[in-house]
Length: 56
Length: 280
Figure 1 (cartoon, rainbow over the protein chains, first blue to last red):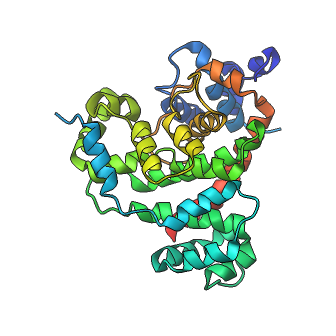
Figure 2 (figure 1 turned 120 degrees about the horizontal axis):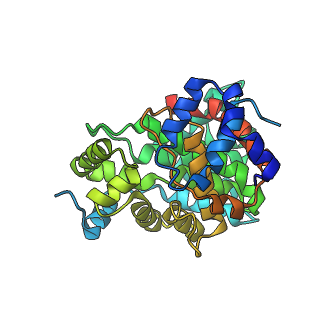
């Protein structure tokens, strides 16, 4: 799971540098029903990392 | 009013063409150490439709055959029994719901998502000590209840999709609102009717119950695989959406971020080839 450091890496301002705006728009559309609670952004943040090229 | 009675759903399921008996035997054989491969291959070969569909899949570019195979036995020799077991099961499921129903339901997107979920479930299975073949087949089947609803109750499902568009809600919520039954319940009824292994029946039933206390490890894999397949946008459906899976579920899953990121990459790579089987 995301620890504190990894969550910091996945914060939206950092992602915006790596993920294109069209990818973020599409991701936001895909997740439009998925985030009942802001704490439930885990998968959104992880896929954003992935789309931004963060594959170890 | 489009609400469905469960009795009507059961009647709809019973009116579906039977899945070939040999598919049940193939699924049960996943857990068996001593499998009579020759006997099973003979039984597959007795069903010309299933044999033809299976060989078309086996000869698709996904399996990387250099020469065309013409018999089930030949395919088993070259691809191996485990791979052919997956091929035959996939062929049977793809063939069970051939439909010309004129609805706005996107059948190709449905199967792309099913294959993506199957691949993802197979990737995640070892982390929860689950047989990857069970996970793959369950992933392929997880939304099969939707195909029952679309093919048996096309006008009611059209009303469901219209409700989703109007309310911009998830298709699951639209099913519950309009039909008063959802595809997971229907999938459970179908997999029970088809006498699939209990673990698969339960997993199909619970794939939208991320935080259920009674969810099994296979069910947990399906919840995660379904969400990831949606999130990776592999169905290519512009209306697709990721189901709500709370953060607590991902913490319970216990697979690290790096492992999940690697799994995403492997799934996308495999999917590029696997989706070709839809063109066969």
